[in-house]
Image (tube, one colour):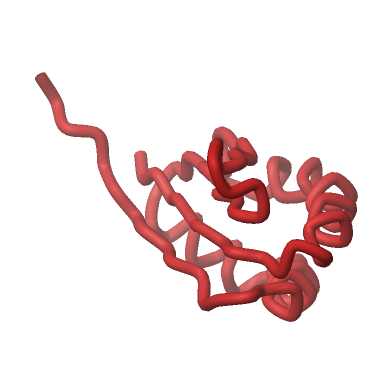
Length: 96
């Protein structure tokens, strides 16, 4: 399993547009092959900072999503609302 965290800083006035976009597309992202989980998090102290937290079957599945028409629709629209570049991390759980 691969965990993907993407931290996004929006212009404060753009957060409603981002939330509308996310809510309109989150179900389609969850239906992508290999997507096992998707959550949206909001920063406690800086409310215009959000993170997506997703689980993917593999890096191959994540990359297939990143090459999909859906990603090509969602990411440019999301990116246009940013106040700063996004930070993305792919991680794996560490076994005990």
